[in-house]
Length: 221
Length: 187
Image (cartoon, rainbow over all chains, first blue to last red; front, side, top):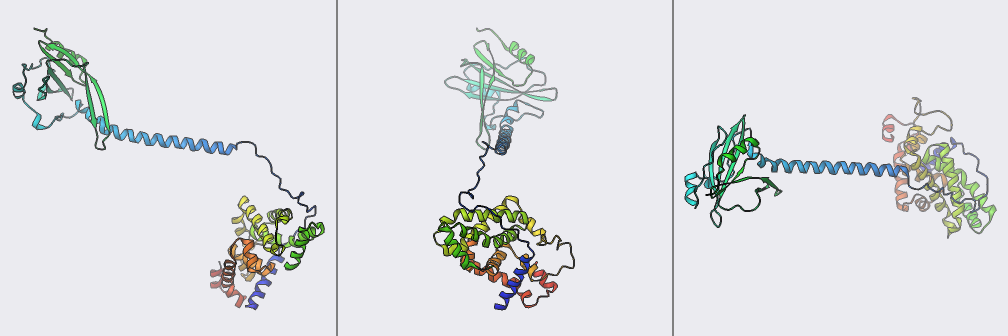
């Protein structure tokens, strides 16, 4: 072991003998002469400002990307039902099969005579009738499907005896994640005798909506 | 060169306000301070800067040293800290690995294929913790406790590092002509 120590010392001597030690610096050794010189920094470093700006920009971009993804995903699921009114494929019913009635079946539950709308676009077919409510205000909805220029349009004609509230329809959609979206769509409302009729045909050309309204309008008796 | 006791005497004199003792202290401390700084930094200019700064700091802080007997470990702690700060600031640690230690002679060992991997070279290739422990213990002459103070580690760790260093150098200690297999181990 002692021999090892000697060998190591000799090797270290050789190692450091290659290093030319510079002359010892001369000068005062007092404490006052060796105080560190503190160069005052000039305010806020520009590098920090740049780094902060980059961080903020990255954060904004990240949050925007995150938010846009969430919005896109939510709307993709929520806006889908809205397009049930206009589609390039045949429209699926919006209510359960058990609630889908014929006009005759719905008529048996309505105290007023159901008006079969006229003036519908050519190629329109009746889908089903839906008794929305019987008491206190009876309301029935007749659903039609129009096929115009390779597009399918849902035509919804509501009939009731009392007009309640403004002529708008409120919708609330909820996706699988529980995200809800509310929409308010304008209605066309008119009178056919004592029956108040409302038309909701979202996406249908305005001229066709006007024709349906004109064809079914009849002064009160 | 390894007169640690003389350093302690000078330190106690300097701490009592003796200007001559302070001057003598720096003159004795300077060569090894420069060598240790060079060992860490691997470059002459940076080592000189670090050693100068360390000597200045030692003089400035000498009044805060309560026990002059602990001067050696305390002083080398300052030297090592200054050298490491300098290395960190200038990112010279990697450079030292590539420079070799022939800067003083002006030639590069890496370019010379006929270079002989001897004990001296092997020490230069040891990891810094092992090499510094070896240098401070065997060259400067500090005890393991003082080396621990200088490096900021317990004395037991210093002894372990010395043992590891010796183990790595063992093939060369027994036979100064290293075989290719030994070179692999050491590299």
